[in-house]
Amino acid sequence: MTIGFQPNLLDDWHTNSPAPTRPPQVIGELGEVDSFVHYVYAMPFIHTPDAVRVRRAIEEIQSFNATRPLGARRLVVIDGPAHFGKTTLVLHTALAQARAVWAQEERQERSPHSIPWAYVNATSGGEGRSVAGAIAGFCHLPPPSSRPTLAQYLQQLAHTSKPMGLHTVFVDDIHALRSFGGRDARSLADSIKALVTGLPLTLVLAGIELRRHPLFVDNGRDRITAAQLLNRSHWVRLRPWPSHDEAGHIHEDWLRLIAHVSEYVALPRGHKQNRLHTRAAIDYLVSGVDGRPGTAIEWLLRAAAWAATNDKPLDRSALVATKPGAR
View 1 (cartoon, rainbow, N blue to C red):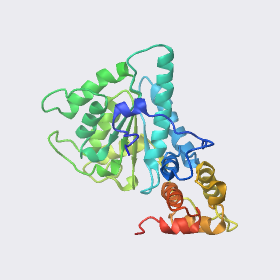
View 2 (cartoon, helix red, strand yellow):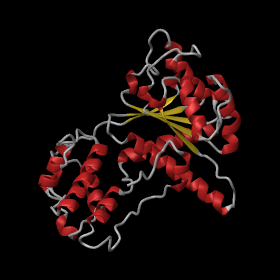
View 3 (spheres, rainbow, N blue to C red):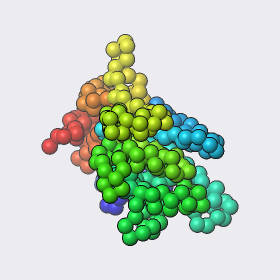
């Protein structure tokens, strides 16, 4: 099986297409279990209240930055627990915007395609220079010199981003950027601020516990820069979902998420094999995900694949067999 989409590869953005939103009438013969498993794992993005918040925040700051010819640009910060689905939330907006741009360019017979978004994983390096280099690499730009500096990368990107149509950069796992100093003798906060102010685009950062990250915390050495980044940030804090409402019932967000997955899942024996709607299954799932919808979705997909492979009901027993961390 091949990986369908690698976000740090530009070519994959062009070839990636949305998954089907409804199961086909016939996936395969009853004995062709693999076809059901492959279908389950290709489930499309599930819209949640958090998805709406993230999309609106990105669109608001994109508009803010695009309509201010002068003044400081703002950035979007997506902060939330691990395994929450932050990357998926941002990439859903990014891919939707990119597809819309490319569809319009195809109607206009424009070639080559523009590059509306760039994706960088911050674990690739520990300083702003490495992030700038990764952005250039995503856009297929050659290094500006044999030993490029942050300033050289910024100059290169500043002159090329508008012609290539680049308007937003997503820096994922920003919590991994924890080292300071380096060849440029610049602090991490200074380097990221240089990306925000030195490039004509919108920066979207996502990470874990960013309120305590050196980028946004006054620590003496970078007090001014950290404060400036914090003041320029449009913050979206993703919190664990409550398991129950005020009346003591399972919260409607969980019921809606489980219903979405259940509606999409196709099993060899049809709807009778799917028992995710039972109280036992719902209670067990919600109690085991620590409020993280990303964990819940992945768990449900594993359970559905297990049920199809083992010819078992998709119920509490399937969730027990596939519980995260279980052996």
